[in-house]
Length: 176
Length: 336
Image 1: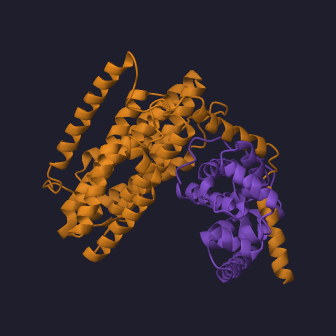
Image 2 (image 1 turned 60 degrees about the vertical axis):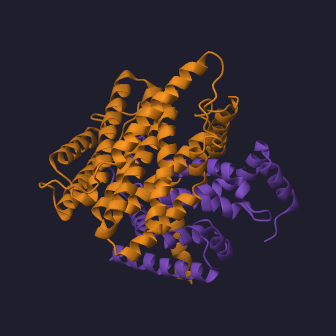
């Protein structure tokens, strides 16, 4: 995947301290970053926090991005790391906004299905979950998923297949 | 294949349900970035230990006082026998059981306490967590740790006590409707919980290693510390971005956060993969120096929130001195 010349110029400018150039480069990456963090953490507030922290780290570490490298896999890799840290600290959610009270109405089948699927996804190990979220939810090609996760395409393909198999098995159990 | 596509669609739908569109995200990220960057640009850069004019004498005196205090603490810790075990010390497994129960108690209390914010209604904000922390503190006071956990026990007590103080400060600012104090004490409290979460689990799962395996563990920790360029920068007064004038800048906040994380990770690893008896004395010394460096960097982080320059300087000096000691301890373990 070649880097477009205009993006390269912006990248060079950003590396030299042009904050405006950095923001332009960052802008199209925020939505996929938010979806990645949301898929991993399943909490929109935590996802926003992860993207904000990743954006700041990307700004600080921009000089480490090699010339000719693409920014999207690099940035999404930082977001994935932020999600890892957020999940590692199980005690990080005391000071946060209370969830709105749930209504009394019985949940429909589709709501229950969604809950079961999210639980099944959460139960996957981190590598499989990350591969599935990147490939299925963000629709990224396997090559880019491999670049983000630092694995080979073959390994990513295996993680997607095994993750999908586990999801399917868990959903079968849920449906009885 | 159709089955796969259906599952993919189903998964996307399930995730979309918990992830509403975020049209505000771009503005929020940009505002946050600018806020963090501007903190670094708003103040002129100046050397930490070269105050000018009338402040010079006072600052010089402060540095001498700090150096003396830290030096005394350093000598007191390094020359105290690290392996003296009182007769009433608990066994390793009994101590791990107590810590495990306290961790589980905090875990359950977190499930019960949903909120601590100024904007939401909290009938008893965080009280179950506070009770669990008090119980933890009592358990630690009533028990004598085995030699393996003698150092980390002191540090866990420090973090539990600080977490209690921070949570009480959260409540006080909540009652006073003081948003700034609330945010600061809340951030401090989270910091303590994060540390306790990581390190106490290392205690629970701690296993003694063979000498060869332990050398490999220490080698890996050496690499972790070497990769922490922010730690190296913080430990060098001539290179640091963390001058007193810039202690609240984005760069300095980042340096302190990375250093905190590196020290915490190494401390947790050294506790989890315990040294064999033949290396226990060197290991205890390394843990002690890591613990003091940890307290130093925690102090810096707390001072960044409140703008307390004296506390920041004290934490910085502590970190600087014990960073060198930690590296010397590691070299001694690997060289011996």
